[in-house]
Image (cartoon, rainbow, N blue to C red):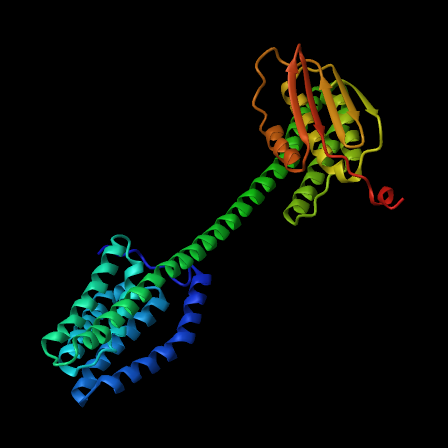
Length: 380
Protein backbone atom coordinates (compact mmCIF):
# COMPACT_ATOMS: atom_id res chain seq x y z
CA UNK A 1 0.00 0.00 0.00
CA UNK A 2 1.31 3.41 -0.96
CA UNK A 3 -0.36 6.06 1.16
CA UNK A 4 -0.95 9.60 0.04
CA UNK A 5 0.18 12.50 2.17
CA UNK A 6 -2.60 13.70 4.46
CA UNK A 7 -3.95 17.18 4.03
CA UNK A 8 -3.44 19.29 7.11
CA UNK A 9 -6.28 21.30 8.55
CA UNK A 10 -4.15 24.46 8.53
CA UNK A 11 -3.69 24.22 4.78
CA UNK A 12 -7.27 23.10 4.05
CA UNK A 13 -9.53 24.91 6.53
CA UNK A 14 -12.80 23.99 4.80
CA UNK A 15 -11.97 20.28 4.71
CA UNK A 16 -10.77 20.41 8.29
CA UNK A 17 -14.00 22.02 9.42
CA UNK A 18 -16.06 19.36 7.64
CA UNK A 19 -14.05 16.57 9.24
CA UNK A 20 -14.50 18.13 12.68
CA UNK A 21 -18.21 18.41 12.05
CA UNK A 22 -18.36 14.71 11.14
CA UNK A 23 -16.38 13.85 14.26
CA UNK A 24 -18.74 15.83 16.47
CA UNK A 25 -21.85 14.33 14.89
CA UNK A 26 -20.91 10.68 14.47
CA UNK A 27 -18.37 9.83 17.18
CA UNK A 28 -21.02 9.61 19.94
CA UNK A 29 -23.14 7.37 17.68
CA UNK A 30 -20.19 5.07 16.99
CA UNK A 31 -19.35 4.90 20.68
CA UNK A 32 -22.92 3.90 21.51
CA UNK A 33 -23.00 1.36 18.67
CA UNK A 34 -19.69 -0.13 19.85
CA UNK A 35 -20.97 -0.44 23.42
CA UNK A 36 -24.11 -2.20 22.16
CA UNK A 37 -22.02 -4.63 20.09
CA UNK A 38 -19.80 -5.52 23.04
CA UNK A 39 -22.78 -5.91 25.37
CA UNK A 40 -24.61 -8.09 22.85
CA UNK A 41 -21.80 -10.42 21.72
CA UNK A 42 -19.61 -10.73 24.83
CA UNK A 43 -20.23 -13.80 27.00
CA UNK A 44 -17.47 -13.09 29.49
CA UNK A 45 -15.20 -10.30 30.64
CA UNK A 46 -12.48 -11.68 28.40
CA UNK A 47 -14.81 -11.52 25.41
CA UNK A 48 -15.74 -7.96 26.35
CA UNK A 49 -12.05 -7.01 26.51
CA UNK A 50 -11.23 -8.50 23.09
CA UNK A 51 -14.31 -7.15 21.35
CA UNK A 52 -13.79 -3.78 23.03
CA UNK A 53 -10.28 -3.65 21.56
CA UNK A 54 -11.76 -4.01 18.07
CA UNK A 55 -14.31 -1.26 18.74
CA UNK A 56 -11.59 1.06 20.09
CA UNK A 57 -9.42 0.44 17.01
CA UNK A 58 -12.36 1.39 14.77
CA UNK A 59 -12.95 4.56 16.80
CA UNK A 60 -9.26 5.46 16.59
CA UNK A 61 -9.35 5.14 12.82
CA UNK A 62 -12.35 7.48 12.71
CA UNK A 63 -10.73 10.06 15.01
CA UNK A 64 -7.47 10.03 13.02
CA UNK A 65 -9.44 10.27 9.76
CA UNK A 66 -11.12 13.39 11.13
CA UNK A 67 -7.64 14.75 11.90
CA UNK A 68 -6.49 14.03 8.34
CA UNK A 69 -3.81 11.44 9.12
CA UNK A 70 -5.62 8.09 9.26
CA UNK A 71 -2.91 6.40 7.20
CA UNK A 72 -0.51 6.81 10.11
CA UNK A 73 -2.59 4.40 12.20
CA UNK A 74 -4.08 2.39 9.31
CA UNK A 75 -2.02 -0.78 9.73
CA UNK A 76 -2.48 -1.33 13.49
CA UNK A 77 -6.21 -0.48 13.33
CA UNK A 78 -6.81 -2.90 10.47
CA UNK A 79 -4.77 -5.66 12.15
CA UNK A 80 -6.65 -5.33 15.45
CA UNK A 81 -10.13 -5.18 13.91
CA UNK A 82 -9.33 -7.98 11.45
CA UNK A 83 -8.12 -10.19 14.32
CA UNK A 84 -11.15 -9.47 16.53
CA UNK A 85 -13.65 -10.54 13.86
CA UNK A 86 -12.58 -14.23 13.71
CA UNK A 87 -12.37 -14.29 17.53
CA UNK A 88 -15.97 -13.07 17.67
CA UNK A 89 -17.15 -15.62 15.10
CA UNK A 90 -15.26 -18.70 16.32
CA UNK A 91 -14.97 -18.10 20.07
CA UNK A 92 -17.51 -15.59 21.32
CA UNK A 93 -20.16 -16.61 18.83
CA UNK A 94 -21.04 -12.99 18.02
CA UNK A 95 -21.77 -11.60 14.58
CA UNK A 96 -22.01 -7.83 15.14
CA UNK A 97 -18.38 -6.85 15.68
CA UNK A 98 -17.76 -7.03 11.94
CA UNK A 99 -18.74 -3.35 12.00
CA UNK A 100 -15.33 -2.59 13.53
CA UNK A 101 -13.30 -4.01 10.66
CA UNK A 102 -15.80 -2.58 8.15
CA UNK A 103 -15.49 0.88 9.70
CA UNK A 104 -11.70 0.81 9.88
CA UNK A 105 -11.50 -0.36 6.27
CA UNK A 106 -13.97 2.31 5.16
CA UNK A 107 -11.82 5.08 6.65
CA UNK A 108 -8.51 3.70 5.40
CA UNK A 109 -9.04 2.16 1.97
CA UNK A 110 -10.43 5.24 0.11
CA UNK A 111 -7.37 7.22 1.27
CA UNK A 112 -4.94 4.89 -0.50
CA UNK A 113 -3.26 6.21 -3.63
CA UNK A 114 -3.70 3.04 -5.67
CA UNK A 115 -5.37 -0.42 -5.72
CA UNK A 116 -8.21 0.84 -3.58
CA UNK A 117 -10.82 -1.32 -5.30
CA UNK A 118 -8.63 -4.40 -4.88
CA UNK A 119 -8.24 -3.77 -1.13
CA UNK A 120 -11.98 -3.07 -0.78
CA UNK A 121 -12.83 -6.38 -2.46
CA UNK A 122 -10.20 -8.22 -0.41
CA UNK A 123 -11.59 -6.89 2.87
CA UNK A 124 -15.15 -7.75 1.88
CA UNK A 125 -14.11 -11.28 0.92
CA UNK A 126 -12.23 -11.60 4.22
CA UNK A 127 -15.34 -10.64 6.18
CA UNK A 128 -17.39 -13.22 4.23
CA UNK A 129 -14.78 -15.97 4.59
CA UNK A 130 -14.42 -15.48 8.35
CA UNK A 131 -18.19 -15.42 8.73
CA UNK A 132 -18.50 -18.66 6.75
CA UNK A 133 -15.94 -20.31 9.05
CA UNK A 134 -18.68 -20.32 11.71
CA UNK A 135 -19.97 -23.43 9.99
CA UNK A 136 -16.85 -25.27 11.21
CA UNK A 137 -17.71 -24.85 14.89
CA UNK A 138 -21.47 -24.30 15.01
CA UNK A 139 -24.23 -26.88 15.04
CA UNK A 140 -26.84 -24.44 13.82
CA UNK A 141 -29.00 -24.19 10.75
CA UNK A 142 -26.73 -23.60 7.76
CA UNK A 143 -29.00 -21.03 6.18
CA UNK A 144 -29.26 -19.18 9.48
CA UNK A 145 -25.47 -19.12 9.87
CA UNK A 146 -24.93 -17.92 6.33
CA UNK A 147 -27.53 -15.18 6.76
CA UNK A 148 -26.26 -13.99 10.15
CA UNK A 149 -22.51 -14.41 9.72
CA UNK A 150 -21.98 -14.04 5.96
CA UNK A 151 -24.75 -12.30 4.10
CA UNK A 152 -25.46 -9.46 6.54
CA UNK A 153 -21.81 -8.68 7.50
CA UNK A 154 -20.60 -8.93 3.90
CA UNK A 155 -23.40 -6.80 2.48
CA UNK A 156 -23.07 -4.09 5.10
CA UNK A 157 -19.26 -4.05 4.78
CA UNK A 158 -19.45 -3.68 0.99
CA UNK A 159 -22.05 -0.92 1.35
CA UNK A 160 -20.07 1.03 3.95
CA UNK A 161 -16.81 0.89 1.99
CA UNK A 162 -18.59 1.60 -1.30
CA UNK A 163 -20.27 4.70 0.09
CA UNK A 164 -16.96 6.01 1.38
CA UNK A 165 -15.57 6.34 -2.15
CA UNK A 166 -17.96 9.13 -3.25
CA UNK A 167 -17.49 10.65 0.19
CA UNK A 168 -13.75 10.72 -0.47
CA UNK A 169 -14.40 12.37 -3.85
CA UNK A 170 -16.48 15.01 -2.11
CA UNK A 171 -13.57 15.88 0.16
CA UNK A 172 -11.25 15.94 -2.86
CA UNK A 173 -13.54 18.46 -4.54
CA UNK A 174 -13.51 20.59 -1.40
CA UNK A 175 -9.72 20.46 -1.43
CA UNK A 176 -9.60 21.44 -5.11
CA UNK A 177 -11.96 24.35 -4.49
CA UNK A 178 -9.81 25.55 -1.61
CA UNK A 179 -6.70 25.30 -3.78
CA UNK A 180 -8.46 27.19 -6.58
CA UNK A 181 -9.45 29.91 -4.15
CA UNK A 182 -5.87 30.23 -2.94
CA UNK A 183 -4.60 30.40 -6.53
CA UNK A 184 -7.15 33.08 -7.35
CA UNK A 185 -6.03 35.08 -4.33
CA UNK A 186 -2.40 34.74 -5.42
CA UNK A 187 -3.30 35.83 -8.96
CA UNK A 188 -5.15 38.84 -7.57
CA UNK A 189 -2.03 39.82 -5.64
CA UNK A 190 0.12 39.37 -8.75
CA UNK A 191 -2.30 41.45 -10.85
CA UNK A 192 -2.24 44.20 -8.27
CA UNK A 193 1.57 44.16 -8.22
CA UNK A 194 1.66 44.42 -12.01
CA UNK A 195 -0.83 47.28 -11.90
CA UNK A 196 1.22 49.05 -9.24
CA UNK A 197 4.44 48.56 -11.22
CA UNK A 198 2.77 49.92 -14.35
CA UNK A 199 1.45 52.97 -12.51
CA UNK A 200 4.86 53.54 -10.98
CA UNK A 201 6.38 53.34 -14.46
CA UNK A 202 3.82 55.86 -15.70
CA UNK A 203 4.78 58.31 -12.98
CA UNK A 204 8.52 57.94 -12.57
CA UNK A 205 9.55 56.76 -16.03
CA UNK A 206 7.87 59.75 -17.63
CA UNK A 207 9.27 62.19 -15.08
CA UNK A 208 12.83 60.90 -15.26
CA UNK A 209 12.90 61.21 -19.04
CA UNK A 210 11.54 64.77 -18.88
CA UNK A 211 14.07 65.66 -16.19
CA UNK A 212 16.81 64.32 -18.45
CA UNK A 213 15.66 66.54 -21.34
CA UNK A 214 15.27 69.62 -19.18
CA UNK A 215 18.64 69.06 -17.52
CA UNK A 216 20.35 68.84 -20.93
CA UNK A 217 18.56 72.03 -21.99
CA UNK A 218 19.60 73.84 -18.81
CA UNK A 219 23.22 72.83 -19.38
CA UNK A 220 23.10 74.39 -22.85
CA UNK A 221 21.51 77.60 -21.55
CA UNK A 222 23.58 78.08 -18.40
CA UNK A 223 26.11 80.32 -20.19
CA UNK A 224 23.97 81.92 -22.89
CA UNK A 225 20.64 82.43 -21.09
CA UNK A 226 21.04 82.20 -17.34
CA UNK A 227 17.46 83.17 -16.51
CA UNK A 228 16.04 80.54 -18.86
CA UNK A 229 18.39 77.94 -17.34
CA UNK A 230 17.17 78.90 -13.86
CA UNK A 231 13.59 78.57 -15.05
CA UNK A 232 14.29 75.07 -16.37
CA UNK A 233 15.86 74.11 -13.04
CA UNK A 234 12.82 75.44 -11.18
CA UNK A 235 10.57 73.38 -13.41
CA UNK A 236 12.74 70.31 -12.78
CA UNK A 237 12.42 70.88 -9.04
CA UNK A 238 8.65 71.31 -9.31
CA UNK A 239 8.37 68.22 -11.50
CA UNK A 240 10.33 66.10 -9.05
CA UNK A 241 8.25 67.38 -6.14
CA UNK A 242 5.05 66.60 -8.01
CA UNK A 243 6.34 63.10 -8.81
CA UNK A 244 7.09 62.47 -5.13
CA UNK A 245 3.54 63.53 -4.28
CA UNK A 246 2.07 61.27 -6.96
CA UNK A 247 4.21 58.34 -5.81
CA UNK A 248 2.93 58.76 -2.25
CA UNK A 249 -0.63 58.98 -3.54
CA UNK A 250 -0.09 55.82 -5.56
CA UNK A 251 1.20 54.00 -2.48
CA UNK A 252 -2.07 54.86 -0.72
CA UNK A 253 -4.22 54.10 -3.82
CA UNK A 254 -5.29 57.75 -4.13
CA UNK A 255 -3.76 58.70 -7.48
CA UNK A 256 -6.06 59.82 -10.29
CA UNK A 257 -4.87 61.24 -13.59
CA UNK A 258 -6.39 64.47 -14.86
CA UNK A 259 -6.69 64.42 -18.64
CA UNK A 260 -6.73 68.22 -18.96
CA UNK A 261 -3.56 68.46 -16.89
CA UNK A 262 -1.96 65.73 -18.98
CA UNK A 263 -2.84 67.57 -22.19
CA UNK A 264 -1.28 70.77 -20.91
CA UNK A 265 1.77 68.91 -19.70
CA UNK A 266 2.18 67.15 -23.05
CA UNK A 267 1.83 70.46 -24.91
CA UNK A 268 4.52 72.08 -22.76
CA UNK A 269 6.89 69.16 -23.18
CA UNK A 270 6.48 68.99 -26.95
CA UNK A 271 6.93 72.72 -27.34
CA UNK A 272 10.01 72.66 -25.10
CA UNK A 273 11.45 69.95 -27.38
CA UNK A 274 10.70 72.05 -30.47
CA UNK A 275 7.79 69.90 -31.61
CA UNK A 276 4.69 71.50 -33.10
CA UNK A 277 1.60 70.15 -31.32
CA UNK A 278 -2.06 70.41 -32.24
CA UNK A 279 -4.93 69.29 -30.01
CA UNK A 280 -8.41 68.82 -31.45
CA UNK A 281 -11.42 68.19 -29.20
CA UNK A 282 -14.29 66.66 -31.12
CA UNK A 283 -16.38 66.29 -27.95
CA UNK A 284 -16.10 66.56 -24.19
CA UNK A 285 -14.39 63.51 -22.77
CA UNK A 286 -16.53 61.20 -20.65
CA UNK A 287 -15.33 61.51 -17.02
CA UNK A 288 -15.38 57.72 -16.76
CA UNK A 289 -12.83 57.45 -19.57
CA UNK A 290 -10.69 60.44 -18.61
CA UNK A 291 -8.19 58.68 -16.37
CA UNK A 292 -7.38 55.80 -18.72
CA UNK A 293 -7.12 58.12 -21.74
CA UNK A 294 -4.80 60.31 -19.68
CA UNK A 295 -2.57 57.30 -19.03
CA UNK A 296 -2.45 56.56 -22.77
CA UNK A 297 -1.50 60.19 -23.50
CA UNK A 298 1.20 60.25 -20.84
CA UNK A 299 2.79 56.98 -21.99
CA UNK A 300 2.64 58.02 -25.66
CA UNK A 301 4.21 61.41 -24.85
CA UNK A 302 7.11 59.68 -23.14
CA UNK A 303 7.58 57.32 -26.11
CA UNK A 304 7.58 60.19 -28.63
CA UNK A 305 10.19 62.12 -26.67
CA UNK A 306 12.30 59.02 -26.15
CA UNK A 307 12.09 57.14 -29.45
CA UNK A 308 11.02 59.53 -32.23
CA UNK A 309 12.55 62.50 -34.01
CA UNK A 310 9.16 64.18 -34.25
CA UNK A 311 8.43 67.65 -35.60
CA UNK A 312 4.62 67.45 -35.43
CA UNK A 313 2.16 65.76 -33.07
CA UNK A 314 -1.60 65.61 -33.56
CA UNK A 315 -3.84 64.75 -30.58
CA UNK A 316 -7.53 64.12 -31.26
CA UNK A 317 -10.06 63.61 -28.48
CA UNK A 318 -13.63 62.39 -28.62
CA UNK A 319 -16.08 61.43 -25.89
CA UNK A 320 -14.44 58.05 -25.26
CA UNK A 321 -11.31 57.89 -27.42
CA UNK A 322 -7.94 59.48 -28.02
CA UNK A 323 -5.68 59.36 -31.08
CA UNK A 324 -2.06 60.56 -31.07
CA UNK A 325 -0.16 60.74 -34.37
CA UNK A 326 3.43 61.92 -34.74
CA UNK A 327 5.95 62.04 -37.54
CA UNK A 328 9.64 61.23 -37.25
CA UNK A 329 9.08 57.55 -36.49
CA UNK A 330 12.07 55.32 -37.15
CA UNK A 331 12.15 53.37 -40.39
CA UNK A 332 12.47 50.10 -38.55
CA UNK A 333 10.25 47.38 -37.13
CA UNK A 334 7.92 48.50 -34.39
CA UNK A 335 9.97 48.60 -31.16
CA UNK A 336 8.89 46.81 -28.01
CA UNK A 337 6.95 49.34 -25.96
CA UNK A 338 6.25 47.67 -22.65
CA UNK A 339 4.37 50.62 -21.20
CA UNK A 340 1.89 50.66 -24.08
CA UNK A 341 1.62 46.86 -23.94
CA UNK A 342 0.59 47.06 -20.29
CA UNK A 343 -1.85 49.86 -21.09
CA UNK A 344 -3.28 47.71 -23.89
CA UNK A 345 -4.16 45.07 -21.33
CA UNK A 346 -5.90 47.67 -19.16
CA UNK A 347 -7.85 49.09 -22.06
CA UNK A 348 -8.92 45.60 -23.14
CA UNK A 349 -9.93 44.73 -19.58
CA UNK A 350 -12.08 47.88 -19.58
CA UNK A 351 -13.85 46.69 -22.73
CA UNK A 352 -11.92 48.94 -25.12
CA UNK A 353 -9.21 48.59 -27.76
CA UNK A 354 -5.70 50.05 -28.07
CA UNK A 355 -4.19 50.39 -31.54
CA UNK A 356 -0.48 50.97 -32.16
CA UNK A 357 0.73 51.41 -35.74
CA UNK A 358 3.95 52.55 -37.39
CA UNK A 359 3.89 53.30 -41.11
CA UNK A 360 5.59 55.69 -43.58
CA UNK A 361 7.44 57.53 -40.84
CA UNK A 362 4.27 58.07 -38.81
CA UNK A 363 3.43 56.54 -35.47
CA UNK A 364 -0.18 56.24 -34.35
CA UNK A 365 -1.54 55.39 -30.93
CA UNK A 366 -5.31 55.21 -30.55
CA UNK A 367 -7.42 54.09 -27.59
CA UNK A 368 -11.16 53.59 -27.90
CA UNK A 369 -13.22 52.85 -24.78
CA UNK A 370 -16.85 51.75 -24.49
CA UNK A 371 -19.28 54.65 -24.65
CA UNK A 372 -20.48 55.56 -21.17
CA UNK A 373 -23.25 57.99 -20.56
CA UNK A 374 -22.95 60.17 -17.48
CA UNK A 375 -25.51 59.92 -14.67
CA UNK A 376 -26.97 63.28 -15.63
CA UNK A 377 -27.56 62.05 -19.17
CA UNK A 378 -29.09 58.81 -17.94
CA UNK A 379 -31.54 60.67 -15.69
CA UNK A 380 -32.81 62.93 -18.44
